[in-house]
Length: 306
Image (cartoon, rainbow, N blue to C red; front, side, top):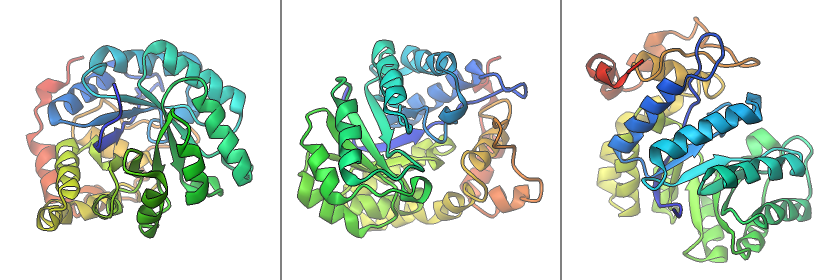
C-alpha cells in the first residue's frame, strides 16, 4: 500500500514497568488510530524507541502492526542507523514481515559527506522497499542538502523525505527539484501546517499519538490551503506541540498517552527515563490544551482490554 498524504503517527512503543513490550496496549493504540483516520503509521522510529529494541522485539512490533492495520493504512518502518549492514538487515526484516515502506535517517554522529549519504540511501532503496529519507540535523549533525535529495529522488524506490530541519524555506526549493510526485513530510508538529501550506504533503507527527483525529483534520485543512481552518485547529494545539518536547522524545508523549488512558505505563527504556517529577502535570497538560484535558476525563476506557 503506497504512502499517503496527510498525518502519519510516529507511534510510541508501549512498555510495561518491567520494560517488556506491552502488546495489548500497542493493539489498542493501533485501533485508536484506525478509528481516528490516521493516514499513515510510522513504527520503530525515534518516538518508538527503536534504538533500544532487539531484532526479535522489532519483529513483535511489526507483526502486531501488520496484523492490525495492513491494507488499511500504509506501514512505514524505521530502519535507519549508522551501519549500512544493519540498515539492510532491518530493512529486509521489514520487507519479509510486510511493511509498506522504510524510514531511513541520515547516519548520525559520523558526519558522512553528501556522496556517502546518497550511496547510503540508494543502496537501501536497491533492496526493493520504498524509502522515505529522514533529515534531522539537530540530532544527527549531518544535513542532506536539497541537491542531494534531488539526486536520491531519481531512484524509483526513494519516494519521499521527512524534513525536520525546521527550515520552511526549503519546501519550495526541494519541491522545485523533485517534482510533485515525491512526498515531503514535516518532522516538526509545531510548523507542520505551514510546511504543508508551502507545498508539503503532510507530517510524521508525535502529537498524533494522543490527538490523531485533530492532526488528520489539520493536515487535510493545510492540503486544501484553508488558512482559517488551519488556524482554528492548530491554534489550540500549539501548547501541546511544545510541551510534548519539554524532555527528550518520547518521554513526555508516553506520559501524556498514559494519563489519557491509552497505554498502561509511561515507562521508557534506559538511557531514557520516565518524566521528571519537576515537570508538573499542569505544565505538560492542563496549560497545553483544553481539548486534551477534556480527553483525560472523557476518554472511553473500554478501549483498554487487558
